[in-house]
Amino acid sequence: MEHERIWAVSIEARITNTRDENMADVVRIFDTTLRDGEQAPGYSMNLDEKLRMARQLELMGVDVIEAGFAIASPGDFASVEAIAKEIRNCTVASLSRALEKDIDASWNALKGAAHPRIHTFIATSDIHMEHKLRMKSEDVLDQAVRMVAYARNLCGEVEFSAEDASRSSPEFLYRIFEAVIKAGAKYINIPDTVGYTTPEEFAHLVSSVREHVPNIDQAVISVHCHNDLGLAVANTLAAIEAGAGQVECTVNGIGERAGNAAMEELVMILKTRKERYGKETNIDTTQIYKASRLLASLTGVQVQPNKAIVGANAFAHEAGIHQHGVLAHASTYEIMTPESIGLHESKMVLGKHSGRHAFTDRIKSLGYSVDSETLTEMFNQFKKLADKKKVVSDRDIEALMESRTASIPETFTLDRFVINSGNTISATALVRLKKDDEFHEDVATGDGPVDASFLAVDRIVGSTFTLEEYDIHAVTGGKDAQGDVSVRISRNGRKWKGRGVSTDIVEASILAYLSAVNRYLYEEQK
Image (cartoon, rainbow, N blue to C red; front, top):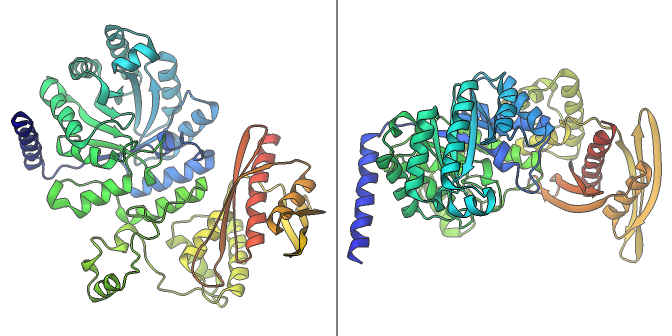
């Protein structure tokens, strides 16, 4: 036991020395929401949605946006290419296996970037080399060096990742990192690919790499932690203390399996506990909440209420003793302010008497940019909503904007619906849709008003869909709250998502279903 205590003390000493020497260091934020995050089931985004998310990440001030895996599909290539051309203030990266065809695809997609980075990887653990790659360690080392050199001849900035590094031989990592740095890699990534390690172990690994790779001063150490054991953020913080200069993370912690280290948690920990870590980031934290809400809107996957930083309950207090303390002085139970992440209440009330100028000013302050035609449509929708509600909040406006600003053309729009339902009769729905200035109407019965409405839409469109997911929640409190509905439908193994908002739950449901159906029709037409 004594040798374990000495080892722990030595690790703490190395960490403390690192912190003392680099108190003013800025930790680079490498956001992989659009790559690793989007790979998770249920989080896929189309090109326009990825662009919107990329713009928000740029607005937040992330250092690197990993825009995708260019060779994975034509859609991924197109999104990397589009983001590379549009984003000017961040490095844009594309992931590549250590293969020439992957690296070529990444470079072709990244050519238009102001600051491109090719991110290439190969597995280095015994279990991956034997069972997945079927390669000897010397062959893996040679492949890594050749591909980093190949990428470096195309792009000025190359990052190398040793996949499954936390289960790899440290001695092999020292060798491969030294070799790829010589070949031109400027960033060395140490991933905990399967979320296996613990903070103490990971800090030791990062410290060991710093000590045993002779040319490590020529590169920045990066880490990429997964959350399979719930330790992604803790492991990343331990790595920062041990000398990591870049952290790879995602908004809301989304990603493969249990997800990645949550960007908002890492950033706010470093900000709130600056005296402990002595590190800063380039993130504008007032954009965090908006980024979280935007991602939830684009993917249709809501954030759990108890999620740290951005969950609905993060700044909520129900217990009487807590409420009393917060009212007396917020710091009694709040270690950060809601305003620090961009969460605030409107100072100017919008209602049915508000004009176009006030509405335009509000949506601009919320970060939306729309053309005049869309603005007119949004304002008309706002006035309809204001007739139903006494006060329209920022959250109402955000929900309205997100449900109406999708890039998918609306083949069908809802004109009207009539519901006949009760606990002693089958629900019947009459739905009338508009397409190309013509009206199409049908009637269906179902297990409830929502089911009957969806079946009526199916009859009008001429296609049958399976409802995979149906989620509804209130945008605000009160009996006049808008219902925000997200659906996911499928047909022949393919899936589409949709979202609808209305003070009428059935109408919100039909709008969400139509949004998903229109996505299906758009893809069929293409």
